[in-house]
Length: 223
Image (cartoon, rainbow, N blue to C red; front, side, top):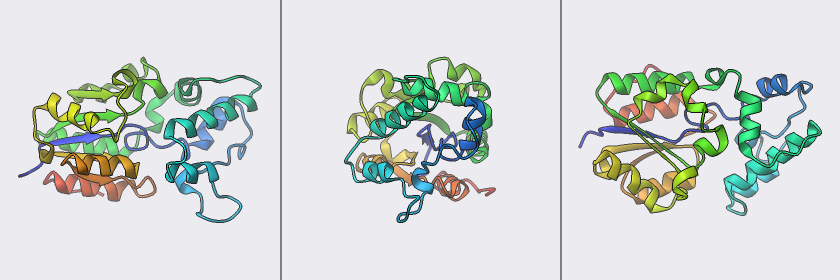
């Protein structure tokens, strides 16, 4: 069966990660260049620059939300403020020009899939929680997505099987007709267990990951 739908995680897959945009964040917040040093998946596995908190998340000792809430509080403290919501961090860091942090590979792949008649959906654990409900209005391309399942409202976090079922039921497609792309391995494995075709997105090689997704859709890759 040729895959008929492209299902994307949002943060890290459609957008560049906060790790990749420290320069934009520092400029937006008025912090000196080099102030933010946590690097997540871009940090070496060993050595003084290791992001120990990120490694703890990868071992499932803390959740992804726990990780980002810690970084949110830390960054607020740098400004002499008390930040209690990830939404505050993202909006302050990215709200002025959200298109600047979109992955060009994502926009190209979305356009190619749409042109080929593939269906588009988003399955996110934190779209509006992290970005704010008005963020979508600043990104016209999101209108191309016929289904957006966001755990901000459903309360069902990947890799819960119900999260993937919500997408396939909304699209009225079998799981095997959907290509699911996520940067968290646990979520990719959850999609595989649900029967989806999964691409574990490598944030350090976005073109390679999108090329794989397009291949599963039967489409040539420009990357």
